[in-house]
Amino acid sequence: MLVSGSELFQAAKKGGYAVGAFNLNNMEILQAIIEAAEEENSPVFIQASQGGIKYAGIEYIAGMARVAAEKARIPIALNLDHGTSFTQVAQCVRHGFSAVMIDGSKHPFEENIALTQKVVEVAHPNNVSVEAELGKIGGVEDDIVVDAADASFTDPKEAAEFAERTKVDALAIAIGTAHGVYKGEPKLDFKRLEEIAAITDVPLVLHGASGISDEQIRKAVPHGITKINIDTDLRVAFSQAIKDLLAKKPDEIDPRKILGPARDAMKEVARTKMRLFGSAGRA
Image (cartoon, rainbow, N blue to C red; front, side, top):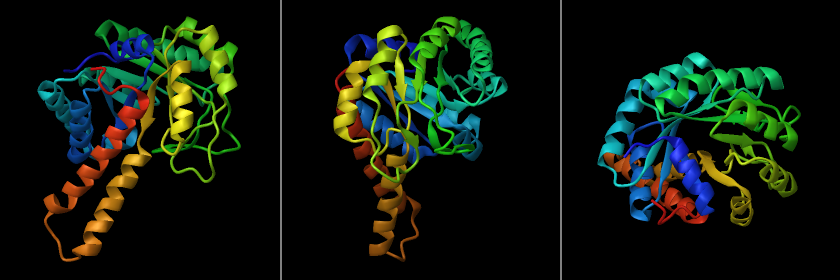
């Protein structure tokens, strides 16, 4: 069943666990995520980035998600990941997304607030949750590129003011993660996370979590992290399974036999993450 993202945020905050948010670009990825969630009895965010929407088309993304939600026994939120414009958010709301993320982190503080407030005004009356971002998370997310030198951690006092003035349902914070593949071992700033969680009640979101150690994830969740984004780990599993299959069977031409193992590999990644985040058995 399709539900507003706010339902998943609040249940996770109350229950002390985090919900996985997995990016989809095609049917096999979606099937892997949903099958894992159903077998683990876990709530889940399925989300489409700007690149995913451009690749598959918003009608296909929304249509596939609607079918999955109608058939599934677990709560699902369909989320826009890293939306950068009000127009894009409005388009997703019109097509039945139940959650949106507006990324105004590249703007000055006041402009970020103004953009986020505008999104909240159109989303909340339609029972669509709003996630925003404060601080700049490094790395590459489709068309969004943030150099390491430009990345900046979230200021706790600004986070509290931002949450109060915008009335967002969740806030993505920068505490040391990055999008894409890490070049070194990432280390999260737990002191900053604790400070942010102590002065704001808004559910917190961790982006760029692929590659973060299990130990750090387990430590982050009790400090207010209620949603954790995973994309790169799925891509790695997808591509490796296809490479392995074609290495063994280079003459294989049946897409079902090529993509089937890739779907199974992604499903195992999603299942493992759901158990790690504590959302398994929480649907």
